[in-house]
Amino acid sequence: EVQLVESGGGLVLPGGSLRLSCTASGFGFSFYSMNWVRQAPGKGLEWISNIGSNHSSIYYADSVRGRFAISRDNAKNSLFLQMNNLRADDTAVYYCARDAFSGGAFDYWGQGTLVTVSS
Amino acid sequence: DIQMTQSPSSLSASVGDRVTITCQASQDISNYLNWYQQKPGKAPKLLIYDASNLERGVPSRFSGSGSGTDFTFTLSSLQPEDIATYYCQQSDNLPYTFGQGTKLEIK
Image (cartoon, rainbow over all chains, first blue to last red; front, side):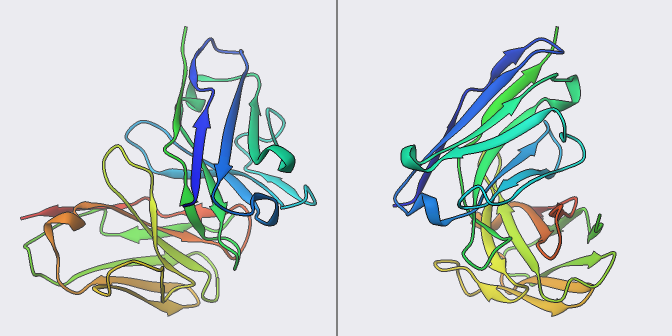
C-alpha cells in the first residue's frame, strides 16, 4: 500500500524557519517525481515545488522561490521542504504528493501537516 | 502562468442528479487536465487524469472530457458520499495550477 506521511509542521514566528519531511512507503520512491502542495485555511490548492526522481530537476512557484528548498533522500525514501523567512501568508496545510508515472497528475497524497506562521 | 477558471464555485443538487463542472484554461493545454475530489479535513484524491482517464478504483459515475482550453467533469448520478469540493488542475506547464474549486452540496 502506497503511503506518504508528512511531519515537521507547527507554529513558527514570522521570519523563522521550518523543515518538513515526507516519508514514503509501498512503492519505488526513487523512480517518482515528488511535489509539495499547500492549502491555506479555507482556500484552494497551490502547487509550490517539484523535484525529479534523481534530483535532475527542481521547480518552484514564484511565491516560494528563494525562500523554500526542496530535497530528497532516495536511500531513506524521504522528501523534504526547508522553509526559510516564513511569512503569515505561508500559513497552510502542506501536502506531499507523488507524480503519477505519466507526469503532472498527483496520484497519491499524504495527510498533510499544518504550518502556522504567527507572532 | 496558466490560469484555470472553474465554474460554478458552488453547486447544490439532489441525490441522483447529473452534475457538471467546467474548467477553462487560459491557453491550450492539450489534454493535460486532472480532476480531484477533496472531502473536509482530508487530502485531495485523484479522480480523472489526462482529461478523460478514470483513476483506478474510482466509480464509473465520474467522467471527464475536453481538450485544448475547455474541459468538463461529470457526475452521472450524485450520491451522498460525493459531497466534497472538486478541483481541476493543469499539468501541461509548470507551475502546475489549480482551479479555485467547486463545492458540491446536497439539496
